[in-house]
Image (cartoon, rainbow, N blue to C red):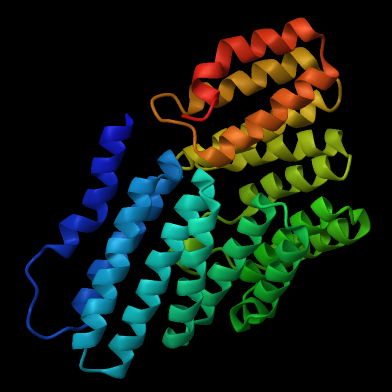
Length: 327
């Protein structure tokens, strides 16, 4: 799907439900309609990655939810609409984090946290803290990344739900690994694994955390293990992640594949690493690479220059510069 088609799909994911005729009274049917729109945007993100078109569609959804909230006649519906506005706004923030437009992403997260508080929705608050940890990591503010992940751990939903707790511990592990705290990172990773073992997979889950499960935990394990200097363990975890990932998570598959290439490179397996990195472009064929993925491939290229003969690094850059370089 080319960018123009992606823009159309992202817009349609929100615009089609939002322009539908509405009854004078705001109620549950409006909540359901907007919830379906959030789900459509999350599905687009999983397939194509974050882009400004998705951000615009998500913000339109947030505006719609807030407009309906002003017309709502019951407290319960008002709170659910505030919660949806928080969800849409967090989705907009995530799309910019994935695209590496980080300053605007932070502003969206501030607003999303306010809306989550107005909704009295601890699940939405957990989503925002999770994204805040990811944003801080992208900004190389690792202390804030750890603090945000620990704030996610402290939410009521994380204290009650093993799934949410596992994600919060895994995000803490990533922040600690990048901070240079190997022992703390591996301890948090162990807690993430322990709580994942307590998850009841038959229970429904909010759409924002649907991505998280054994496959994503393996992928985060690959990240942590590579950062703390265990590339063989990172490679093994990346293979497990790729084996467990659903087909619909194309962007996550490409990102984990790039992580696998880095783990191979850090073991000195230059040719397999280059071959694996090529798979990233095949997986994402037809779509521009999100900025976060381009950054990861930039790390691969820099490490390739350091660890491989110059000829190989130049050949890799010449072959993939068009797809990999920022637009």
